[in-house]
Amino acid sequence: MAFARALLPALLSLALTGALADTGAAADTADTADTAAAAAAVAYDGQTRHETALFSVKSTNNAAAQAFTADGTRLSRVSVYLSSGASTGTVTVQVRRVRGDAGSALASKALDLAALGGAGAGWVEFPVDAPVTAGTTYHLFLQATTTQDGPIAWHGTRQSVPGSLTSWNYDAAYWGGWHEDTSRLAFHVNPTGGERCGESEPCYVPASALAARTAGLLTNLVTTEAVLPSFAVGASFIDGSNVLRLPSGRWRYLPAGSSASTVVAANDPDALAQVDESRAWLAAGQVPGATTAQRAAAQRALLSMRALLKPNGAFAAGWSPAWEYSWPRDGAFAAAAFAATGHDEEAYRILRYDALTQRGDGTWEARTRLDGSGPPDARKWQLDGNGWVPWAAWQWYRAAPAGGRDERLRALYPMVRRAADYAARSLGSDGLPPASPDYWELDTATTNIGTAAPLLAGLNASADLAARLGMSGDAERWGAAARRLSAGIATGFAPLGYQRTVDGRHGRDSAVAFMAPPFNSSPPDLGEALDSTYRALLLPNGGVSPGNDPDFSWGSYAWTASTTFFALAWSGTGEQTKAAEALEWVLSKRNGLGELPETVNGVGLPSSVAPLGWTDSLVLLTALSLQGSPQPAPPTATP
Image (cartoon, rainbow, N blue to C red):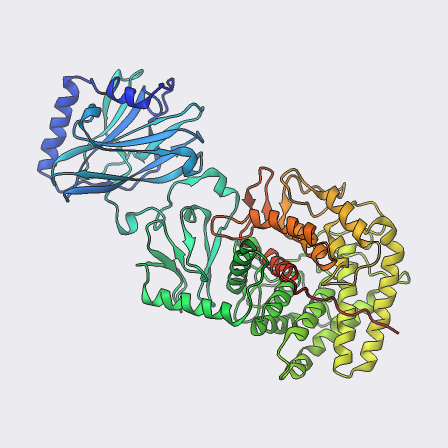
């Protein structure tokens, strides 16, 4: 009976040759009946339905077998659909002539549950090597051994499967041995093509892998498709591309003009052309990093950011429904990172999208649909965009090819002017902007550092851009506003260690890093504020929380973006060792496809979405700084 419980044997091999070998004449008669049925039928070498956990295969008291016939003369691989509540142990498959006789086994293969990733479910492929005779009945036998609690079951269907052979349940306690069942177990003999796991159905997926919603991206630069975690197991990207190598060895990619991915043979010419194109794009810029790990992460970050960038310049935060929108903040970081790594066209495309989606008063919606048609909901707009976008425009300008650079800046300048004028007008008598939702996308009752610091960067950036175009009046006006804001931050936030809000009631905030390069020129007291804030926000899993506001908890989840804020700030202020250590933690949380997740849960696993474009951008900027190419902050406006 399914999920019957029994004690673990000391040695599985002894159980197979002892408890299960001597099953009596009834078993021989049943095997003979299967053989007679097979002789009059076509080959029965697979059954795909697996909606039911049919039989327990755990311990000496439980096992299962499926009769089959092959149409060839050799077995090289068999697969079963398995679920396990145990994270350690061994699962053994045998191909037997006689169902209950381990001595009749033609092949045997054991796989380790821990090596499969622990507790989980999916198709498990066992490599075997056994000669068979076409049309002859054999039995696929399965049994597991573990010291842990939790069921281990072979799945299948209770529905009728025409032309099928018998499934067998071995339950010593309930049936007294083998029991013929009308249900049919899920299996494949010599699976090929779509029968191979990881193509149309997932390979065995550890439950731990499902903490994240997405695992990677496929793209043809128009359409983007997420690789689900269940299909990322055992897969890897072809180096320098968004073409996925599957566990079967075949490739999955998004062909040009297609709205959905397809599976092709390895080295398919069209897929190879896509690989060559993306490698050429990488080579046209720079893949930064001071170490092999940093360069590998930077390459994947660039390719993922390219996949998140739409032809119209909208930059998606991630590729899962709640993230498939363009935030001015995320796009600004992407534009800065694209520009700094030599990808001018992509950076400028984002800025042009910002110009097209700017509201008439000079502000931006919190986020827009990717077609630019407007916001998806009534989420409150966020003033920090008026700092981030001009800052990104400045970072683009300083990295852009000199030829035609001023002309392209003039096309963006009306956007910069509206954004900077709104920011300057927003400052109060204390020099600070009003309360506004920050990058937490939560309101605060008083001014927060997550808005004030970006606006300071944006006003300084706008003043410098105006001066470069000879707009002296604008430069003077925005420079004066930047000086007022800087004084307000020094008076209101500095004595608090740049805490989240100017009233000091909402704890520490990783946005303290926005006071450092490449955003702002570090004030003298910033070093201690960075260190003490990092210590206050550090979580047991090794990453940091965005903040420790007593009115709002981020729980046990560390945010890769917030952790990289500190790495970038330290690298920009000469604290290279601290920066490298923080970045190393972030890079250690890349998933199996090399992608950087948005969050890391309490047990240290990637969660939410992967990749997150914001984290990708931050990692690129930090890698540049650590290799000796830091991005400067906009110059402080002087009277």
